[in-house]
Image (cartoon, rainbow, N blue to C red; front, side, top):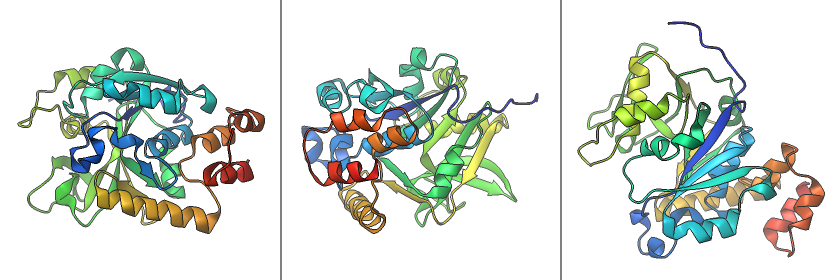
Length: 293
């Protein structure tokens, strides 16, 4: 294999947030709204993955949604300009697997690297931010977290210190390292996704996509330490836990977690006056934001 030139993470990098799906685990709440528009403490769920991408320096972001949710998302986010970013919406008629995201957004990706984050995943921790900003080379990168219930996830199997396979919801214990809902790829991901055949459940699986990069020895694996918090907020209980976590962190530290306005300000993509001009009312969120500017 030839050498792989490294670049800063945010350079030549686009972002994708997968926010389609039916949210069946949250029935009946999701009959009339998208799961990603439901609140996690003081802000909509979609703000958290959006802010994660922004904090990594990514300004060109695609959000994949159901077509019936378009107005709600555009009312909330617009075109992204108030956050100093560009947001483009794409539509997924039916959930046909996470890897379909790269086929849907083929023209958006072009020749860029891309980071996909699941719209119901929440990440927190200083060491996570450092991992995410590490220089990326061609191929793919996954992020793994140690869990007590690996049978619920795609799991990285390791032999010695080398990853050898990724198994979706293994029936037998192979390792505690779950593959989390954030992934980085070079543009070859588009053609690789197109070559995948649907699984038994009729979806093109991201686990199989990642396995292909691993087989070609161009998959990097990053491992979270115990200070990184990863939450999959797809159930009522996990949403409650996430809300309580965010509330505790914000009250203890006097900050805002998952604030795109704050991320844009820290990145110098928008000015203090631009943010203030967009705040026409006072509440807990806006008051805290103004104190932090």
